[in-house]
Length: 180
Image (cartoon, rainbow, N blue to C red; front, side):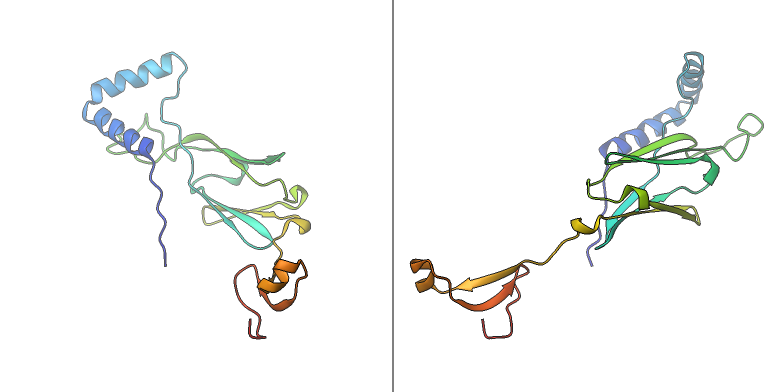
């Protein structure tokens, strides 16, 4: 079984920057005050992790959204762009409590995913369960993959331009049972 992991250089840089800001907390407080004063975000922007898989009949988009209410979600599909946006609200009032460590991200998010043009936009369905949003994007019936048979020809037939079929094989390379 192959395990696929993703690596994001900028995620590592953001983590290092966060750690530096935590160790230098007076500087961090001044930076937050500066951001609030000039209308910038007080916290970092965040984006929920997304998995996109494909079946024969549909694309499946899974988005991890623990703590996000369904009422705070909006899903749109225009042209080939699937957009998921919403907001996760802080569970506690940070002004009323002393925070020792805060690693979870809050605030607005937006993820846009470009899908192939051969999908049925009117049949897209979304469900949420246990903090995971599942979006089913059905493929158009004419866009599904079809198997193309490959015919083998003899060398003599190739030279004369008249093909003689000696066996059949499919595009996957599997030969037919007639000895080819």
